[in-house]
Image (tube, rainbow, N blue to C red; front, side, top):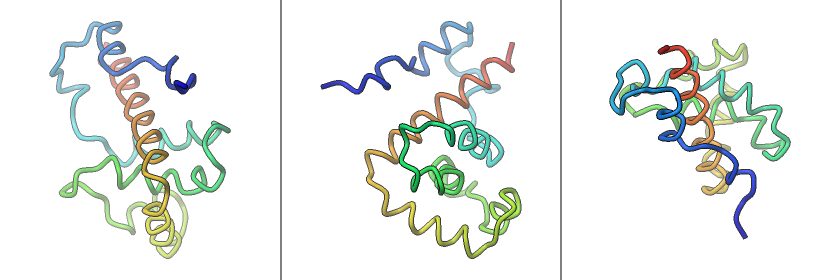
Length: 124
């Protein structure tokens, strides 16, 4: 049975076409930032379809899952931006690795859509 929540979410190509953004527009299609990952996590934190224990570590998980290795933020940067301890970031980062891969994939995909929509809005 298809996931109805995902069925109503537009894909990035649909968003791009609706906003009139060309396929390789560098204002939109560039590496994600720590700020964007945190903003997406904060918005998704109110989504009760995501388990509480996953939402609890969402900002940390997205901060690392959205970044390519060479742009990955240092633990101290993430802790400072979230106003939490380095120890907590390290713990959440380890716990994030134990989250069901399908759940992680779903939240990362949704975060990517949010960020691309925000970038598209700002590119106008």
